[in-house]
Length: 418
Image (cartoon, rainbow, N blue to C red; front, side):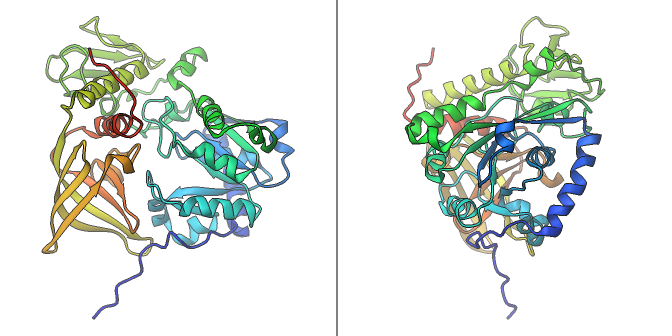
């Protein structure tokens, strides 16, 4: 019988970055910075830090990484990286000091690895607390435990705020690149001395305030024009609901966004503002439309009317060596019981439930690896990618629903619908 290969070992202790890969980072970074119109500012207080520290960064695109490398030079950092990125090679991701993390799980192994890197290896660690790329150029919900971790780590906390990365390559349409100015600013957000006199909720509040942003507002204020002829391609992925007729059948291409039900149409100008072509309804500011959709989902959730079902193709990220395994198709239901998957795989029952309390948000991928829209469901043993089979353009709504169900049932946030 053929021996079953080993699964990805998330419990393996991380290593300091390998010297040769550090050299590769230092050599490659100037080219990324030059060809992507990147400008990085690092405060003197950051440059004066001697020991290990924690970097909290916004997360918008791949260019985030070389910006941080440049901002910290000549210091280096270890990285908290989602497990599927190790598909690029364990030698590579582990070699740059990668610390694996399964998204939106409550395991403590990653936190232990981070404390090991900071305390034993004496190395800076960079984490992207939003745990996914921003969807609409505004900050997403953070893990409520990040403040607790910062106080426990007892090291300086550096904030890296990035602007322009999202506009250059938005999650809903990564290509073509818009070729605009991009900025990063690294500053000291918290010192151990400050945190010693602060409560965990106070630390959490300061961190959450530091992440507040609006890329589209920044674009207008800095008069940065996007002349790309495909600037609205894929915009329907986040602006999926029509504010004119209320149907969830939006589409976009070129510089236009429209509703396939009622025909309402908008044009995206070079400052990313939406102007009605045949309607005076809707939203000029993309984040306003995005927030309105969240409110619509919130109404469904709090009224008890929210429910989603579809068949999904299950792919299991087994290990960097094996890659993804296509397991088959099962039924997915999402409601107040969380995510429930039922069916048969290889003639055996497949039953998995991720209750609302286990996920404050969900990682979504538009056309993941060119194989379709997928959501990331992690267990203690593995990470599944669930590819929607028939539902069209449902990911952004699922993202809202996961967070609002958590707010309702776990955080007990009160909401009164009209």
